[in-house]
Image (cartoon, rainbow, N blue to C red; front, side, top):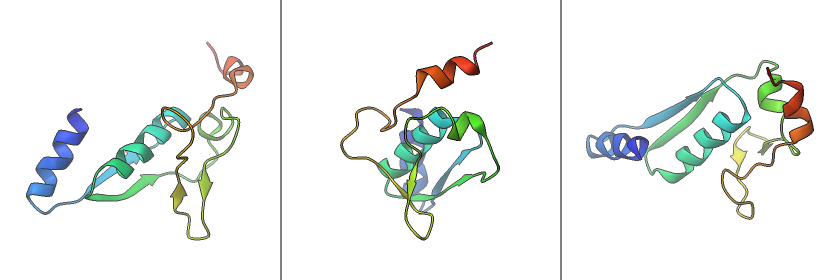
Length: 93
């Protein structure tokens, strides 16, 4: 992917890469997975404000440890999240 190419170029120049995620649950999950997949990842920048498109759409919330490090699932396919489609319908336009 283009993101991995950018990360590789940054790594070749001894630079870190930080994902910035201020969107919904799917975008945030993709940002976490990308950060986990590259060796030169810097912490993902995100918001902690109430954002129902990030917190209300999933069957289970994102997991963190006591230092707010996100813990990714090793057992779930894809981005490691499951959407609650009944809640998604609430936000359909």
